[in-house]
Length: 99
Image 1 (spheres, rainbow, N blue to C red):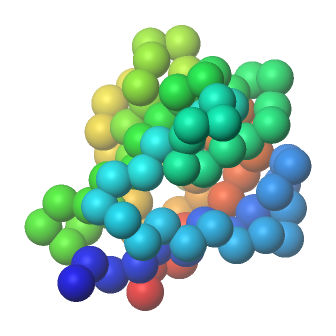
Image 2: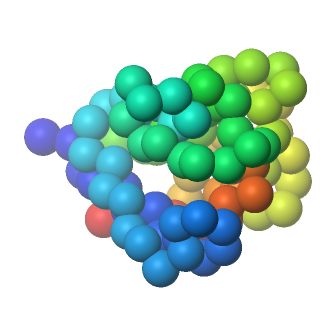
């Protein structure tokens, strides 16, 4: 069974909320069909994906114009998520907690 990843909202529309990532792949975006829906003008319908591979978690933008940052640095390809990282999707920022 896969380990869980928790995203803790530290700014934006999800401040104070915890989102549990408990599947090997979850899509973040503004569309209702996404696994994690963010109501934010800066978030595309299918913005980013969090995936688990070999017991490690990764995030990847799903569009070249998607604003995704890890620890303040904009990313354009898949990057590993680690405990304590700050993940920004549009104007929302989450602290990563790996369990």
